[in-house]
Length: 199
Image (cartoon, rainbow, N blue to C red; front, side, top):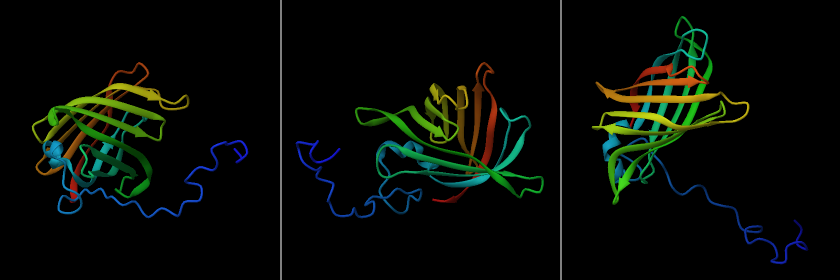
């Protein structure tokens, strides 16, 4: 759109000075950065940087071993950011190629500003799939979520159902992820045991 086409003149940001770096921070380390939002106190054990290994299955033809790094962080607001990257391992436990990446947000449902045990989450991946989860936090060390809605792009993986369980056991983060493709029903997809390496 030219200036002649815009009776209001050029937008105010057109000749604005450069923007400074992002002024806020998020952290997986509870000893630094912003204070954890009070609504997240029940999820405090999950905050951190985790790394470990696991096994994957459906929808791959054969089971496979993988390594994974998960970062669960916060920026002082009442949600957690979830970031995951995994890579395949060969028979000698050496890296054998990049694998799954995923990003999302977890948040407790609030009632009059206070956290309940009900949870909501959104998870997305580059396979063209976005999953909306509803679930519950059980105590401070267990989280169960089941997909309430899944959307996929025309060329994306036809995911139709998913369920995730997370737990802190002996200081480690364990999870199991079940997945349904088309009419398969829920089948084991990925599971792992991750050790805290930061936070």
